[in-house]
Length: 72
Image (cartoon, rainbow, N blue to C red; front, side):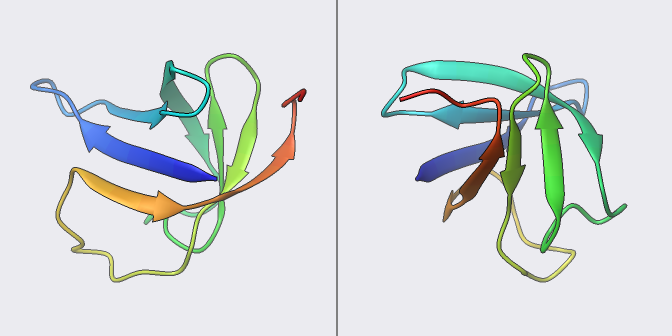
């Protein structure tokens, strides 16, 4: 699924899922650099993000895989 990862003015990360019209803060990351690992959204959903360089500029649209917490 397409996910837009962005950072707000305070530096907090969020994920926007256009197909679901849902934006949630990223509250946990399996890896400190976020890319290539799982992130957990405030609503409990977990997404697996693709591997990318640590200095990838935001906002960016990526293809992520849902792991848990997402219902069709």
